[in-house]
Amino acid sequence: MNVGACACGIFVVPFLLVGILFGIFKEKAANFVSGFNSLPEEERNRYDKTYISRDMRNQCFAWALIMFAGAVLSYMVTAYMAVLAFMVWLIMFFRNVHMDAHAAFKKYLIKSDEI
Image (cartoon, rainbow, N blue to C red; front, side, top):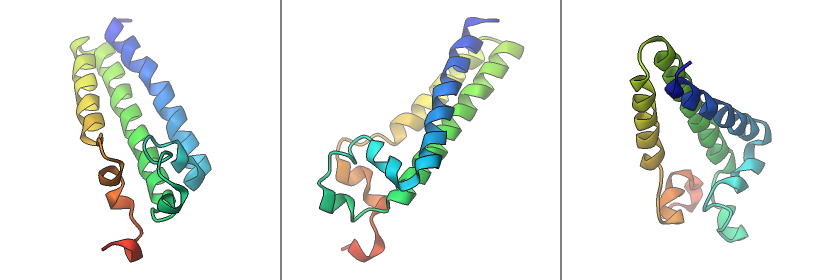
């Protein structure tokens, strides 16, 4: 087995576990999202925690799928497919990184609170 397949395969397990935890704990797991847990309690209540948790679950499952595909393709085709998988994952990851918590969670605002 090549290094690319191993590297991608190692990332599949934690992404799947985190996705499963977000699926099991639903809205309670929203408190584990970086930035959301630092908001004051009254402000956290303005956001749809179920939607946050479902979105994080779906992101983790998508990342696991990308890494699994990278592992399989790296094993069957060429080790450079792992590099491609990591690049796709990095693009997807950094697309959702925001420096401001309000900007990061704007799409999760409960509709009655939008101004």
